Length: 151
Image (cartoon, rainbow, N blue to C red; front, side, top):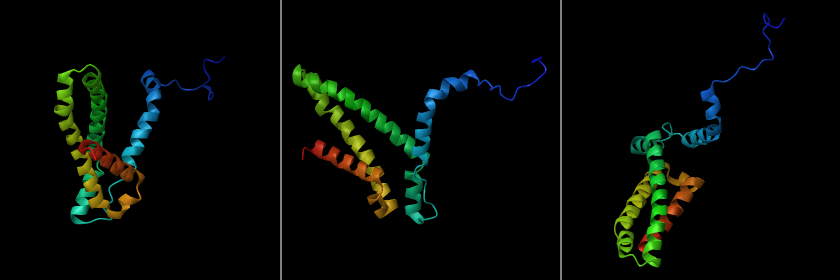
C-alpha cells in the first residue's frame, strides 16, 4: 500500500503565491543585477570622493534616478501628444504647454541627470571613460542639452 510510504520522487507543491510570482522572476533578477552592478568603492576612495561614490552608487539614489527616468518617459509620451496638437490642430494651449511647462520639466530632468553625471565623474574620474553606462548617460545628456538649446 502507498499510504504508509513516503515517496522520494514526489515533488513538493509550491505555494500559490510563489507560482504566481514566477513570471516576475526575470525582472526581479534584472533589477537585482542593476542595483548590485557597481557597489560603492569605499575602500578605494577617501574623503569627499568616498561620500560622492557612496551617494551615487547607493540604493536610494538608484531608486530615485529610476523614478525620474520613468516620469521622464511618461512625459515624453505626453509631450508627443501635445506636440501633435500644437502642430496639426493649431491648438494654442498645447503650443503654450510645449514652450512653457514641459520645457521647464525637461530642464529639470536634464539638471538631475547632469548632477548625477557630475557626481559620477567626481567620484570615479577616468573610470567613467571605461564604463559603457556612464558613456551612454553622457551622450544622452549632451543630446538632451543640444535639443533643448537648439544647437
